[in-house]
Length: 393
Ligand SMILES: [Fe+2]
Image 1: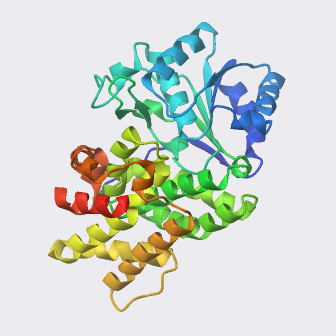
Image 2: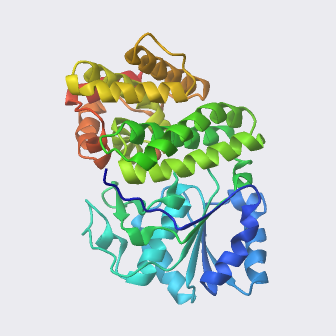
């Protein structure tokens, strides 16, 4: 057994843990570049609280707001402004967009150049030679797990495609994971981010890249997320459900970073680049059909028994009753994910404007993603087209 495991070296988890932000910030720098979303944190008074907390420790704070998905321009402008204002620490607070922007800004503050220099696939893939400026990641949604991963996903405004800067230097120094920050999320954001977390646990658990530590975290994360997500959706103030979702989301970040993802994320990438659909909903719209396609291929192949067994583990973790065989149990898991998607109002892709004539292009782009390479079985173009056809509805 050979494996490597690397994540954010210091994780502070629990209701009220935001109170520790000032101490960690004072330990890591003197001036904070605070990256947040467009306005939700202001409305609930968190930005004022954080600014006061930092001032109380003698730290100045400058703001960068990220509206929508982060792109290379936000990183390039952000890092130059952060350096000009004398900041030596970056705090990312918000959903995946704010956290990914913070990680990218901190990388370029130390390494200079432009975001495109470091981007994989569409950029020059340059390795950031120097460690980033310290980053404190404070997630406010239970979704991406970006607080514990070593990549930042950015859109390129010219080509409209998304790619990652990926290096261990991108790992935050500290993650402060306070479930209280997620209580005010509206139900539709709870649904899309929570489904993303659940899928980021299932796909790594069945992926081609086995990892004994992730197996333990992923299966426990699936158990917690499957029970907690409908409760958090129905009642945002359910503290136990919110805490379970924050934990599951954090583990999902560790899971995807070490094991990769699969077909649902492979398709969600190009969907997100071309249509106005939240990432989690793009994943969830195809997930039941991707699971069914993987099982169909696995059951016909002698080497597919392990994949079937893993999908049965996933089903059991979601409290699906034991079937006559692993395949029956695994199929129960597909039905469970389908029911969950219906309960959380996952839209058919047709409702966001995806038409059947877009399928060939989406399939071609999905097959080039790194997520597709981690999918547990080989799916053909026809298989992916079939998944999309069902998801379009
Ligand atoms: Fe995701």
